[in-house]
Length: 206
Image 1: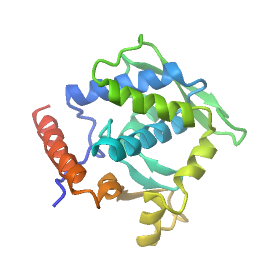
Image 2: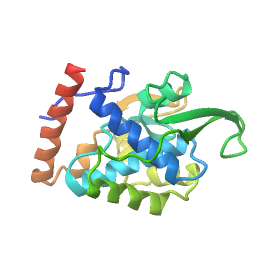
Image 3: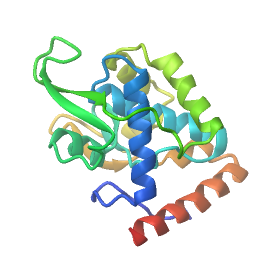
Image 4: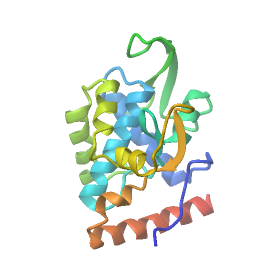
């Protein structure tokens, strides 16, 4: 049985988890030009998917919910949007009208304020991140949303299986279970469950 852990309703990251996520976002902000929040959260999700496929564990351990725009780490999204980010030491957020497209509204530009620091990540993990940046870093947020909406994606599977409609709300409480990506690989699944238990412990002690 998959361990129950969920960062979605609290901002109480453990210090280790906070450091990893902060370093990762700072790194993306340094490496990807014109990085807005929408693009950031798509890249984070793709990085976690690639890491799951590679080793059995995600890199960020963010909790992603099913939104109309795709998988969204609700905790991080509202933290940035509401201006109460616990990651102020790693990146800055500036509100810009219009942002990456011409649809209007407020977009949130992510700018690194720290030097490059990836001490929380192994060389293998940095290689995964760089690979995602190489393939997806130049794509627009709309292109990334389209990619994450493809029929073989976990987002599409959850929307279909749960008959989710976004007519009344763009957000849902449904959480994407990344372990489904490795459901046929017992070795990686065991690694995932062991790591999830450790994350649970860190969250409890924070």
